[in-house]
Image (cartoon, rainbow, N blue to C red; front, side, top):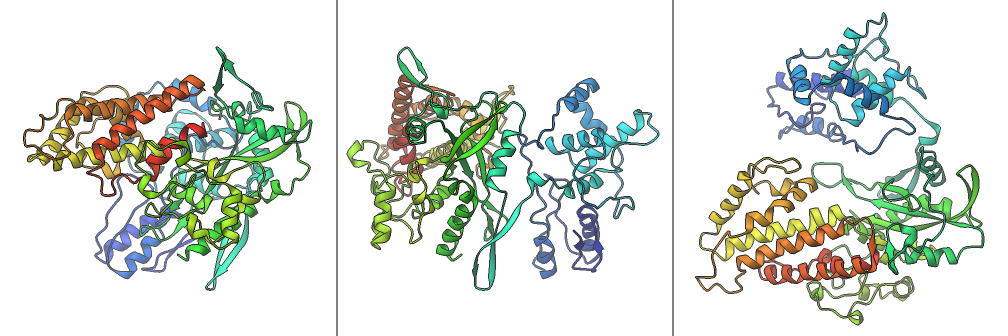
Length: 587
């Protein structure tokens, strides 16, 4: 891959050299440069000049976030961990060393850069270094200092490490593994533009998962009725009712292979017009502790799903997989899809709008009842494949708020897509309902008090005054940056907000309508914490589920009481309804 500067037309073989050059080139034409301090490997430029915007478009994909949990297959970090512990360097001291070091060399085009395709690292030291840099997101400057440190104290005549981290990254980019190769297929064509699916063969993905060391030692092969004190306990997926009924539908002697899909759309440009829609796969057999044209877009997404899942659809007689030193007969079935609410609407092909008449992807509850927490069982009519297909075939899909696109999942056995699509806690609670709770709290402080803005400032002062404590983030700027908070930061807020709100203001001395007293607001945060702790249980007994359901309704009742009149939509929130009426069944 090469990078061409649109200003002077120079060509660079490395992204690092290109970004360094671009910084100098832009200064030469007197364009102001804004550096992104959060990522030392990428620079973001902004200007109204066309040349600047063209250059920026080439940077949009420079930021790469590496999941700490994703390791290169079959590679261990034990040796790296032991090496780090032997150094006995405190983080702060190490940072001081890096800060005091001179800038690393910039190699525009290293002469010894090996660009040929390789399938393995030159040696173990090279491999361990690049795994260390990747896992802990070490920037080029820090990585180059590690190389210098190693070369200085290793007393080797020839260094086994790359000359610099840029060279190491280039080497990794050129590595290929037959079992990790992606295929590309044309899914659809619209207005002379091709839309492709990049994917790995699903069967090969499953086999790759099974090659991970120790993954099969506790691999679930059958339904287990887990009971304690005569109560059913729901800990793993094979303790659930879906597993039992699906297993009973399979041929005698075969096993169920539970496939879980996870989806989270990713915006790839600063204007939010371009998206990638990655889909990840795991197996429910693995224990939890281990383990523009809208119709065109929807149709393309479901065609991609069909192509992606086609290998298991064609397995009419199942598949033999090597588990625990023997071949086991499996029938793969899609069991669960984990997705945030917008992605859930994409899978279920319901209207992706909270303003639709029937916005819930699981049931046919009307929009005006989304904030009603007193609905009976008869009021919550679940969506089914048969009913939705009938509406689609009879051209009455608008009456049930589904799109005019055939849903691929209607043709799959042993799954109700409307119930199998479940939320993940981070998006639904941390970044969803709790975010609403914080925002609405600030709104009622402003609306029901003459000095409301001062009360919000008081909240900020309370947050900033919290002493440092392990595991607690300090919000020195209060809630001013709430729009940029991460899920982890919201979880830190959960731990302290009850103390920040308690005794914050007096009673309703000005006789304000729909006044929320301080005790009720404090109880709301108390009920939230009780509910959230229960949501993090790793296993649930029947009595735990009853307790959890009570906690959900207790919090929801107080949430609606406190915020119904301050919410612009009167709390017509699909996430609220889904949490109250569908989360227990999903467990």
